[in-house]
Image (cartoon, rainbow, N blue to C red; front, side):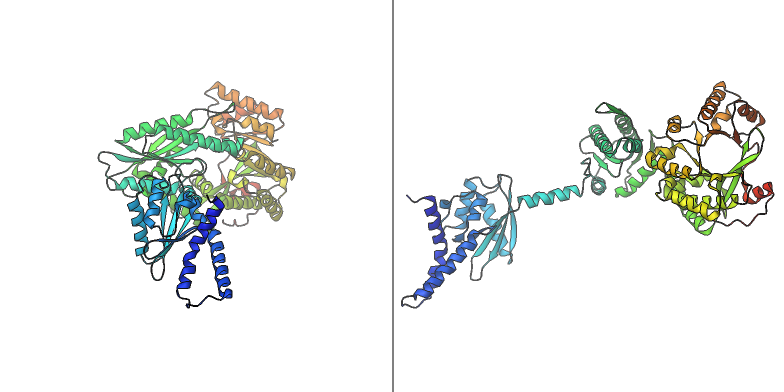
Length: 598
């Protein structure tokens, strides 16, 4: 009985014998010269070597659909033995062997597989067909017709390529961190739902945004922040029915698409989602608590594009954030009107900055014991062509959200330093600094450059910051403040007492001044605890060798009260409201030079 190696050699010789026989058929009747015979043998040897070293499986069939040639790779791909095939067998016989051996996935029959080959050849050009195998692999079969009849079929295992393509396609439509659908998938899902008849139901679109996530992410690191986001995604998925969509569309922003009967059902779902996300998280003994705000909108009968619904839900979310966070708001048409008004205001704000529509007014900082002006706080004002002076409460939040606060803040600083240069040497100028400004890596360099250009002594500049500045990238911001203070610039904490960690920051940075928020002064004559709080803060400032200033002094009774408690300075309408630079110059008896606009 022949050994496997012998059978392999016999099979190999049999596969290329057809070529030798075809050549001999056209040869003269006399004997072949030895040289020609050797050339033919060498040619067939090379052909056989090329065939056996192909990375693809190959079969060649004649015009009668009979097998002429195959290679070893074809046997490997389909798990065939050498004795399964022989020259002259029909393609149908080969397919029957593969089907009987269970090589193809369930559902594949001899007829369907044969028809696939016929269809491929009838198209007149090389065409690939994907064949699914029972073991989970995918094989690409390509059929190329030969001149005079017959064809060559090549087979390639494309399993890994298909998996990679599927993985890439999946990643393009899903969030890598949470494995939730991303914004692309969200739009497709939403539009597909809107295209279907929903009978008595509506599509509820919920825009969700985490509260206090940035504090966790910055305070404990991005690794824990990522774990938290995965946990949030898991909790959201558990709260929705099958068929609903939960997507992640931003850093800590999620969207839920859910079919509901009415608004009441959508609100109930939103309450469950907020409660689930707001429950404490335990990470290796570390307890983390966050919250979530939401905006809701329901689709109407005419809605066919989820894009507009998402915009409406986002407006409702924005309103929820303004109303205190941890709540939800349902979209109302006036929100859209407010958004358009806000966009208009933003556009006008940009134009005002370019066209010089801003002014700096100054409110005196008064020493309580002598009633002397020892400083002035620079306060920006927007002189609108139609509205007159626009309140900072209206445009400063927009400036911060859009980033315009950075160039605007630099202009205010520059204007204030130039104005202060004209005033007596003992008078300082205080300028507010936002978190967005301090976040700029070049902020300290910019401040020192402005001081150098204006010629103002750094000791006469006071920068006022709020707790929000320290909450944002605390270490980097503290380092910047240390650099500025090392150059003689004074640093004051504004609105002290309104944040939960104000006292902790006094341990981390040696502030020169504490400005006690006006909310405590307002109740000083009505509630004993208000005076007690002011007394405690003043005592804390004295023990830390910090100047204490009380804001919002509007009556002489309030002035007397904070003076009795030991405060150093006051600021408020009792002495003066904010005044334009010419009036401040007149106060000090100096000649005013025309103020340049922004």
